[in-house]
Length: 118
Image (tube, rainbow, N blue to C red; front, side, top):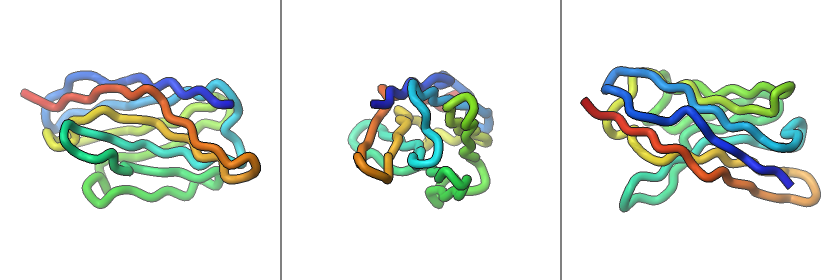
């Protein structure tokens, strides 16, 4: 069982930066793919960025070049550095952990709000 707790959301002006953190209660070492997703009102939850245990990353086209996902195995924490934020980035951001080996499992955090506004 893994519990995920996000932090770092808040209000930022367009062009500003935020760093989100996702702290896992258990080890997220070799068997978990970690991801950040977001959901804004009236829209489906969408993938923002994902990172494997081998540090392979992939990003949504809308955030490429602005967002960076990283993970610290020693701290069991995943980060999302968000730069040059735009109003359309405003959403609730969720951390997700996918266990790829038996027992295959998926865990979600509770979400953290990101607001981008003047």
